[in-house]
Figure: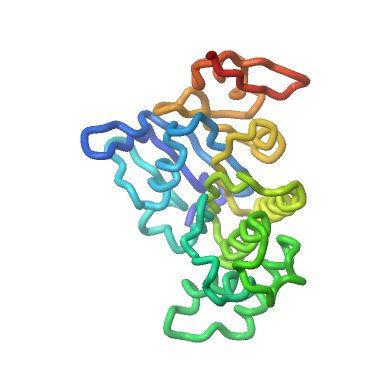
Amino acid sequence: MPSNNEPTLVFDRVTVAYGSVLALQDVHGEVRAGEAVALVGPNGAGKSTLIKAILGLVPVARGAITVLGGSPAASRSKVAYVPQADTLDEDFPISAAGVVLMGRYRSVGWLRRPGRTDKAIAADALDQVGLADRAKDRFGTLSGGQRQRVLLARAIAQQPKLLLLDEPFNGVDAVSQDALLAAVAKLKADGAAVVVSTHDLALAHVSCEEVCLLNKHQFGFGPPDATLTPELLQAAYGGQALELHGDHVIVSRP
């Protein structure tokens, strides 16, 4: 575990490759406890690849990723991940509360039954995302935004030091988006670091202290105002970047 002065997550000139094909090159920066970094870039830029590398699921070809003072594999028990699309079958007969309780299995072990404390932690996590009243509802009957909130609650129940979110706001309604943002803000206030992949530049401004602008390699890593500039966005997206009322909008060339 890092000391109070050490960052939770460090990218040291990270390059990731699939065989002979470079997926991501020369990413460098750090994220500290209580802070969030937004991974911003076009589709295929390497955002999901970087998240997988943080999890230790894809190897780093050059450079290094340090998570909580150690390697990604060694620190995985303190990292929670909410993927773009969960593999949980919507028809599987499990309640929202049951899905969230899965977040406690890493602590209690798959062969032990969660105890009263684990159930209380799971119930609190579901309350944090505003779905305590839907605890007994079958997961598959919830809306897409509600399912995403349940999956975030499952991650919260793990009590992570680092939370990874891969496009969590895609296709969710405004109520679910607000609930997700509030839950992430509480995690940060409790000392967790957050990495969120997103296409929403306004959300990156509002919810993240740092932005990592990517398209196969890093175009910038720093505060949103310094990173989401028209010049850097144009370079990363290959289109024209316009600035409107303080927010940036991408307009691709035909």
